[in-house]
Length: 396
Image 1 (cartoon, rainbow, N blue to C red):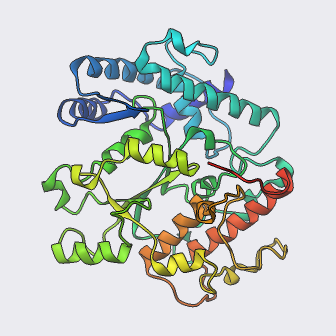
Image 2: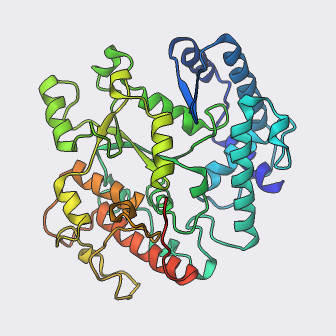
């Protein structure tokens, strides 16, 4: 409808032509020289065959035609603009939200099914008149209290100089969810962060292509030593190391420098959802995938409630709730019997930022982005709790 047409205009204005020379070359390269596996339950199948290449190119052509279609300009910017553009690409060439996915070729079913699910959720959000940035009811909207914090307004310099891009690999059921915390990363870090919805391929979703290129950063050993391909994935795997350990190892092997920037991948969803996304999209280090990073002991101490890393320097917020002035716990509203699974995507990400910037000094008058993000989560949690009522126990 109108919103899908607006998304097309936004895509055209942004220059998102999926069949440009560069994009076509990358599609050919990805299919012919890099075998990428897609895990669907226990079915693992290679997509490097010529027939799959033809299917991908056909889908990319349809996306390109959709992106160039004339349409009115889009409305105010929100974190859902990219999602709307992606949905427009999916719902092209005769496919609509009413399409029966079983009538489609197998290689299109997942993307269309995910897109239908998201479309229904976003339509419900619009019908309710909810905010398209914080995903809360307008009377509980927190956007004015959670402004972007990726640039120091006094110096006009980045507040996260070690971050190149932040990829939020998100389960589709998190999109539009009131209690999701990754939305705050998207809105407060609008230039750095990129939303990547699991289940929708790069032929429809440009950010998925960027993610896949980033996580395969070390496949080419020559590029690895060039200082241009650095990627970390935040996930508590057995081989994960702290950022300090990675920096020390990289310095000893002369792979990366101490001032280099990193692409960071964070998986957003329940733990079951996050594990599936991780296993599906993130190749192992042995296969040329990104380095696994975990939080430092100091960061874990914050999660455990030790008296460091508070947001007291941010207490000049206009929100005078007593909850805001307490130590920021960083636990999501969805409660879980296993306490460490309550740690939110935002809290884990902001503490990684602190690890990467090396700042565990006492709180000072100089607000850091990780302090701002801690406050933003508390503000958003307070608003979500007013909208939804007491937290509920989650088993997933």
